[in-house]
Length: 304
Image (cartoon, rainbow, N blue to C red):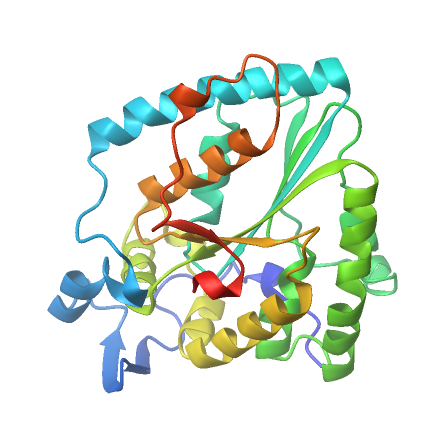
């Protein structure tokens, strides 16, 4: 069994090495996509934003996005002061397919928070010692202490999606994870940690567009790896694993919040807004925060 896992992206491989032509079935049509070709196919360019039943035909205007984001980030600073004053703890897990926008959302969430008490956890592949431990052990060690706001850019949920799909864990390990996770999360919530689980949902064609953007960007091509190619061709397998994960780990005390993220701007607003509206911090301005967009954010598998 391959024990490298998703976090083992081989950065020594440059873009263009290995397989570059993807054979895909999208909306019942067979497609061939050469990701090394710098010219993006018209069917991807035209179909990306509305793929996966995304409800908008245009992205949020940049000026509106920036103005609203700044207001929400000011509220986040208030929230952090409240956590420090009260000793509260927040933990937010971000999951989703590759290129769903997890990293950018976390960056904007934490951008103006004090990094001394706002940490992001993005773990590399497990060490030899960690592979011999209880699966959750290396994650639990990063849980928040008094006054902290902790985000996980991928989390223990690697074992619910990436690992079983790509063969990085056994079926028995996968089943054990699905059995144990609700109990672990019940303990998290019972210990008064404010716990959020976000799934950023991306359409299949939008994922291809973002992979292509990464592949041909001098600034972002380090994000692109052979694992992405493998994942793109296993879309249906990931969907099946995702649905099983929701069925087994979406609970009343630790629900999954689904955010449609083809438009990163709307998705970032939705995530921040959900956190702000969920916590009774001092000085909270509900009029400034605004209402949630029910087309973009919802609870559990029913929203999909």
